[in-house]
Amino acid sequence: MSGVQSTVSFIIPAYNEVENVPLIHEELRKEFESLSYQYEIVYIDDGSSDNTLEVLQKLASSFEEVRYISFTRNFGKEAALIAGLEHAKGEAVIIIDADLQHPVSLIPDMLKGFEEGYDQVIAQRNRTGDSKVRTGLSNLYYLLMNKLVDVDLKNGIGDFRLLSRRAVDSMLELKEGNRFSKGLFSWIGYDQKIIHYENVQRQQGETKWSMSNLVNYGIDGMISFNHKPLRICLYVGLFILVLSLVYITIMFVQVFQQGVSVPGYFTTISAVLFLGGLHLFSLGVIGEYIGRIYYEAKQRPHYLVRETNTTRRKIE
Image (cartoon, rainbow, N blue to C red; front, side, top):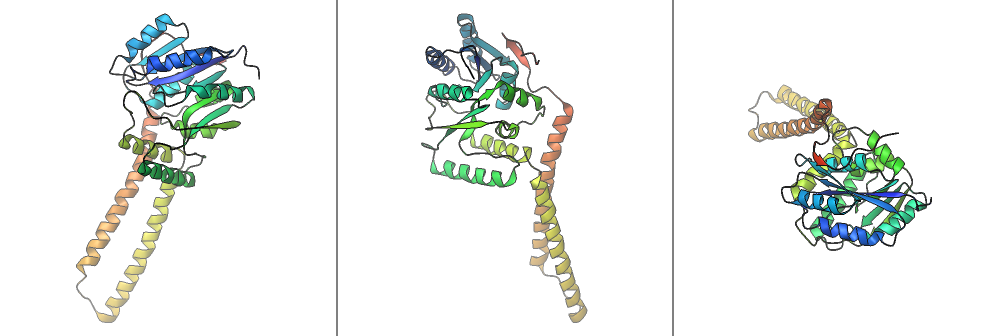
């Protein structure tokens, strides 16, 4: 696959990244000085409360390759990704973060994989520099996820990747509102190549991913690609029902043989608390799925645009 006439689109979500946007832009410009590709950079301002939009406006007025989309509020990274995919016009599309934790130096290797015919060239980082607790929790999460979900998820693989045009078009065919891109990238398939790199720590600004955000993101991933939690509730409910019937039978036999005695306080309270907790847990799981059905039924747009200097790519 010849890349001389090809255009590469970069999708860069940015939320309060006023310090990093000029830096990532300069890094990309330097990298493409030695490459034979045309390129565009699509920045998505995800409702930033700092001066990120003003910086993007200045870049767009100075560099013809800059495109930007500014949301009316913070819609989240998933909305930013789908907006970027809808507006990117290149034959190859690279998703990269604005915080410089995704090494720009990997781009030539990604483009080489694209030229070799791969539809997804994926960057996988190691856990160097992460705390032992975070690394352990991450390993446990992926171990559990791959036993539950219907797609293959690998530790250290995120959104940093190159997608061919047909892979992008396949992603755009998926219309669900509750999106989990890690799973969707795996779900669409296509030939994939993985590039490994050393973990890079953020240099400027603060991460937008708190522990609670990571937990919520993990739950979204688990529920988006399987219905096994519902099946687990069914199995646990049946198991408890069988135990209850056995317990009732034993108690009935004891009453028949020994007569009526005062029930034990511990037994009663234990049964009430256990069954009550089980019911609440099951209702919570069911509620998560019903909530997603509720939001899907509304068919709201993924995002609303306040300002932009580009248009959506026309689907041929």
